[in-house]
Length: 68
Image (tube, rainbow, N blue to C red; front, side, top):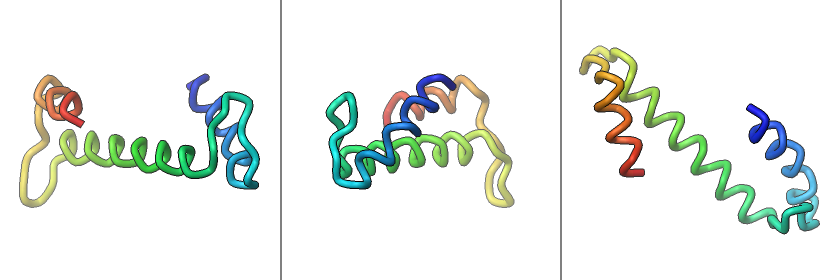
C-alpha cells in the first residue's frame, strides 16, 4: 500500500510534463498504470466465478500472473 501511495504522489508531476523525483516521465507513468490495471484485471478474471467459467484456485491464478 505504501508503494501505491508513493506512486500516486508521482503521477501529478509526470502528467504536468515534469519529471518525477525518481525520473519517471508522463509516458512511463501511464505505461506503468496500464500494466498495473492489466494485472489487476487478469487476477480478478482468474479468481472470480463468471457465467462461462469457474474461478481458478489461487495457485493456478498465481501461475497465470507469473506469465504476465
